[in-house]
Image: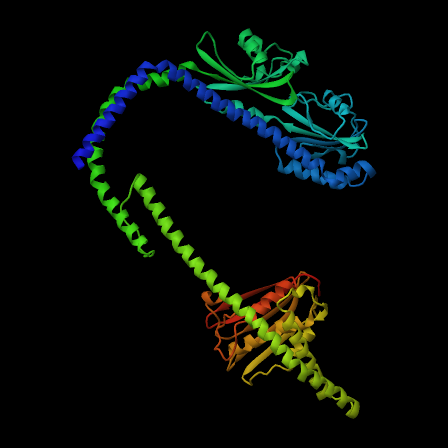
Amino acid sequence: MSRKLAMWISVLVALVLLLSTGIYFAQSRAVIEREIGRRATELLEADRKTVADFLYHMQSVTFGLFHNPYLTMYLDSGEGKDEIENLFMNYCANIPEIQALRVVDSDGVIRIFIRECVNLTGEEGYEPIDISDKEFMQPAFELEEESIIFSNFERGHLPDATSFCPSMLRAVIPFMENGEKRGFLVVNFWGERIGAVIDKMRKEEGFSFIAEMNRKEPMRHGIFLFHRDKTYEFANQMEHNKRVISVYGEDVMHAFENNRNGLMKINNGKDYLAFTTISPYNDVRRQWKIAAVLNGDFIFRSLSGLKYNFIIVMAVSLFMSVITAFIFSARFLKPIGDIKYSLQQYGEGNLDHELEGDFTDELNDMADSIREMASSLKHHIEGMKESRRKMEIVDRLSSLSVLSAGISHELATPLNSILVACTLMEKEYGKSEELTAVRAQAERCVDILSAMKRLMTDSSAQDKTNVNLRETIENIMRFLEVDAKISLKAELNDVYITANETLISQVVLNILINAVDAVYPEGEVNIKLFCIDSSAVLEVSDTGRGMDEKEMENIFDPFFTTKSPDKGTGLGLSIVHRIVTEHGGRISVESEKERGTTIRVEFDESSSC
């Protein structure tokens, strides 16, 4: 089989190479033309996208500033100037394309002026500049809606400047109210990003340039906005005659004027010029032409070199194909057998089987896909098991809620009887500390039973009061049964939160009981209550047996417990987590095996320290 495979591969390689050679020599000229067209299309598409992205970026930045409420407030009442200046300075510092930002009133006078991250209006002696006669402001005065217009691409020149600055493009948008203009937002953008498109090609390959076709303004018609030779740019401002018609001739100028895209020969057929069109002004009379000049000698030289080496490559390829065929055939059969065996194992349900072997190329991709399939199927089955476990927990919780409702109903009557008895005894014998304590605990039990009924609903909708957490903790500690060998220490500050006092008491009680149980028969429990940055914080630390990482992952799951069945049901911390969360708080646990556990509860909302 190896010999047959080697023979067929050799024959196939020979046929492919011979056919390729024939096509190459028969259609070499067509290949070159297509290569030039493809390369030109790629370059122009990349250049056009760069320009379009920059224009879109200008619009996004301008609209983002325009919709800031401080600008409207400033134009209405003159307030918010400091906020606008800070906003402009932040934009200037973070968006390097921005050259200047201006807020101009309806008369064309600059009221806020940030230029190159310098607050000119904040400088002493600044005099407002009137730009109402500027060419780029005239279309803005004629606008009847809040839309962005772009100025001509040009080099800037301010009254206080002695020379032209680098090229830029302005975005102008008016603020309108009831059909009247209240002012304008003017944003100047540096043109370097658009200019960068002309520097993508290697020097020997060619270069790109951007020209403007403007039949509305004859002085700008045919000028270069960007060119590798900087002396060609902005003939209208720099007062020279380097325009498209003078540099590349009438044929190119005619093609630019009458076509959106094109590919043509220049320099007596030696080089190629490709171009495309972009319309930033939505006006067919004002368009930009993005052009690429491709060096024909460079492209032909590359293809000619390939032609001379093709015969050598063909001979070497035939020889290597024979050697490769034998090696490939020897290593191909065993990997296929390994893949077949693994698929059989997976089909029989053995998803723990590992697909191992020395795979290459497409076989390696196939093996990786099979491994991913087996892993995904295994995870899916595990997910189904986990979903089934969660459904069982939901069912148990549902049953527990029914049971809790029954217990609550059964215990309500004797507790109410105790409260009535306390009232009668107080009337007959007077109030005493013992009766007060009995009444308080009975009322607490009634509240807990009421909370159990409401626990399956949104506790955030229940009655909330201003709760002193220190008093709540002290009351619970007073009646908490603790063995003599267990030390209970507390550092408590007066901290108030808006919460349901009964539910918060249940949170504290569950946490303290867990801590005491953890250190039994002897140990130390530390309780701290304090504030950090207006947040109420309760920390309960114990020196108990602690938990490992696996136990901590499930600590808040219903029915999960590290205690014996007679000590707990696993609902305590699950209920605590729900109550804390629905009071806008957070609960976290830190624990280390045989080193102890710390539970931290934080309340941010409505806390008072």
